[in-house]
Image 1 (cartoon, rainbow, N blue to C red):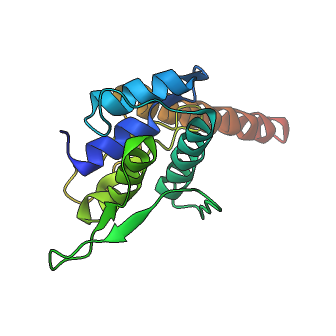
Image 2: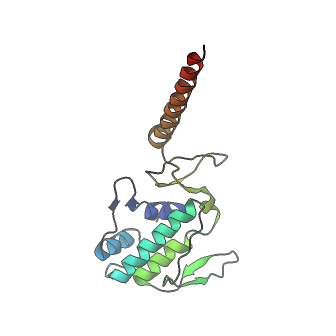
Length: 171
């Protein structure tokens, strides 16, 4: 099984904002996704309500990773407080709801501070910031970071051309 941070990252990234594609577009796909990560048993089936819960949880997590307020009213996820001497949440049930509760519980702990959402508005992919000072802003500097910086550079250049043109008109 992957680390809690990797689980949350992978879950949030099941929806690709840039291409508007969703890995969890049906209850069957949700059940397979959870099963492949060891969060449910081989015979578990998801319902439309489970799929709705998964989508709401995923987008709530994405908002929280953007450091925006995220409320998830009425999500039927049952967790209990663990008793291993440190704060933890443990899924109270089994099945698909238990698997989704395990994802929600994975947000606790130090790894959450390393999780972020790409600052590029058209991307919004979750990533784990492994930089020493936790200052990374983009999922990929080569793609999203470069795109953002190029856009800003071009905007600055357009602004400086207008400024130069107005200076020559007054001479």
